[in-house]
Length: 180
Image (tube, rainbow, N blue to C red; front, side, top):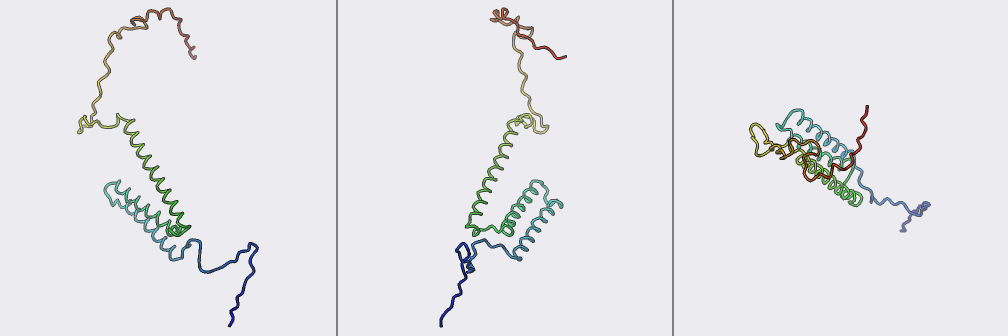
């Protein structure tokens, strides 16, 4: 018995199209995976709405952290089920790019928050409470006023300054005209 092979003429590029079941592209998902992703996305959206509207947590900072946690999980769900990002797609380069981007975003956000906090702390000292003040009333100790400089009380012009005798011979500075 002889085996016959049916050869198809090569296209203009000279390459044969083979369908051996090997796909070089990432899996594009199925209806089941899209439905799974959709259901997870709806659940991960509904729970934070319930947490906020139902005032489940007493502290708003706890509520914010829970909502941010659900948002992070939802980002992962979208990337896996809708963007089809995994370690096999594009030889792992898409995951590597995602990790790099995530690291950069975390560094930029945390650095910005750190800088803004310290600028607020250092540039607004009057707004901060003093540890030596009265904690019950929130009063802050005010530093004493600058003491009066001796010999400056009755000074008018250059008369009372010692060692400036030669300044009387200098020409006067021109004065800018006043606007009407």
